[in-house]
Length: 458
Image (cartoon, rainbow, N blue to C red; front, side, top):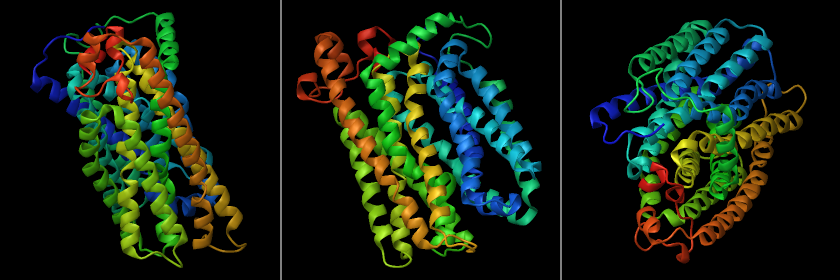
């Protein structure tokens, strides 16, 4: 499939806007468990470890499906996957609305995770096909930002509806919102400017497998994977599951105050996204340095919170959520590596590989926190004490250490690859801003060397 030249700005914007609406709905579905975790423990009569299984089931399916979904995306296109993913999430929320049995509830979260896995990378592929490469960093960050509005819908309106109307009506409304997004995709989204639905050429599966192997072999793709790993997990786990119980049970905040902090975290992500995109566009060779700064900031503020004697003051919790808000935009830098180190015809596979990183880390942390909370909560206690939360969240430092080492490792590998391939001055002049050359150190976008439109526009 080739990219048609010069689609109208209006048409491209409409297609992207509807696709982003589908992603917003996916984030809403994904976040709906995190803000209802306390109610879920009561509804299903489960402990912290069992509650973690709900989230892990959702995240595990999401992570496990990223590479298969990336291959499907390169073969069938964004529109079909957005429709399939949205339908699966609606089915999952319908099941969750009526579930009273743990097994049905876990199955419902699996459906949500499966549909969610098809959504974000499908939107990124739409960005790649509908917009010039120079606009990609900003549009990818904007996609992430707008999608995070779904977390606000989950944190405030869904919680309010849950408390007013009850479990089943709240999740039926959630399913209705998802169904609306599916209908919008059906009407408005097309895979590329020059094709309608159902007329795109479908590449052979063997060719898609070869492109997957090529994407994995590219060190820039693996740098993207570890970038996503190290930057995302802390904020994601806080927002998806354990932040709300930590704030309510550990820090003694009211449910309203806790939901407000989670909403503030989302607002912080909206503000940080354009800043990170601007820095990536201005300094593409120093993207990994930005990732490491975001990681260090998260580790530092958590150290203060965990070491604070007694419950943390409210201002410190505000600082915590604002710093954690940087993790989402920082993780999105991984997708920029996938875009600039791979040609457009394998962008789905490359993005799928990258997207595995943060969600594998999140799964590990969700499980670890649940296990540590159960081990450190005194027998007979109705809620985990603050000391239990401190031990549980300290597990993050092991993941940060692993991720930082791997980012440095694959940054060096990407630099060696750039020096070894040395594409020549014509490609370098197009792909690399003035003053940012391979001999100056840093990660150079390499897609142009493969002849793909993504690389030439990077």
